[in-house]
Image (tube, rainbow, N blue to C red):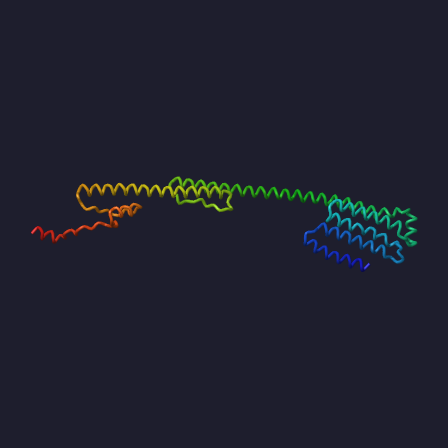
Length: 281
């Protein structure tokens, strides 16, 4: 029995490697075949190829391959394993030579002793298959319930994020409507409303540029009115034309028209109080 057992041990180590690789059905089939091969090797290697009386419990051990098949293989694999075990037990019991004690037992019981290992195979296969199937269904239901609960939590979190995003968006729009065009919606790509927030930020930026352009246009209009008023006063009073820079885009144009750079006008110093008294004297 030592060589078959050592072979089964080697197959077990290979099955551990397959389990780490996630090949569960392959390792299940491999172990089931290895167990059956070990038991068959034990039965076929008795002296003189004769089955003794103490070989009968070995037939019961074939149920191990059935349990392994139920644990790792789908339904058809369990059925094939059970049918193979029953077929081999029947053929081996009938055609392999028997010792005198086993032959006497078979003759006395009219081969009804064969029903025990066959019944063990069928009953264990049926009961364990039903139990494993019910367990798998319970696990699937539990997984579905957990999945539904996770989806509900995700939806609740998304709703909270959406509510927060809507409040931030409304606050941004309100501040922009009140004249604060420097405000921006604080959105990142992880946020549900980040595309809407980006569009709002772009709109506020354009409004800000439009407002700045309108303010610049207003300043230019005011500067133009100031220049026209200064020109009219100079013509009316026949004075030299002086114009202070207005700080707008019209300053270079006015400088070119006047032929000089705009600067502060220079006036003669006013007489001090002492000079005023001397002038009175």
